[in-house]
Image (cartoon, rainbow, N blue to C red; front, side, top):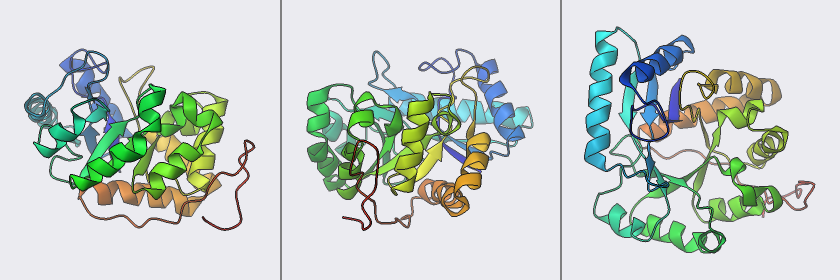
Length: 258
């Protein structure tokens, strides 16, 4: 099993503050059957500035420690990037770290600013013109999605992918977020799943629990998300189902995709 979204690098963002805690997170992941973890530290989220060299160095160091501890987990480099003024220039110049470093996928955290959300289509287009595909992280937790989930439909129709957070599936982010997450999955608006783990305690990995819960609801969808994680890490194209527009505030779906 692969985790495509995890804040496991030490003392780099709001994840673990020490290398010891990072190692404990990896031990926890190994017990859950996770073999590879994409480290996705925040970039331009608040005061967090993590350039590519800082991240790759931290990944190398952590992998060496895990090997020394005989923990069968491999850390892969990545970033969770908040939209900012120079994002497109930084992508073009190689200052943004794609998923697993060499792929065409960039993990994008939606901005809280309403004006930037309104202009998100243009930003997604620019990212694609630069040769990359944006993966929207944890859209179900964004405050604007509750009242207007078709924001995500629009992004997906315009070429973006989306990743759901495991805590949302199991209800750790609240019942409203849990319900929205499931509806987004049902509408083919979610393409992969990550733990969004930040430590080994209160914000530990719930990835296995989330997958098991999804299997009880829709086994094929659960396996598709797991498979897509593997495909994305290798930089290949995933198979996407046609997304459905969410047509009312009660989240009733049209009978045919639009």
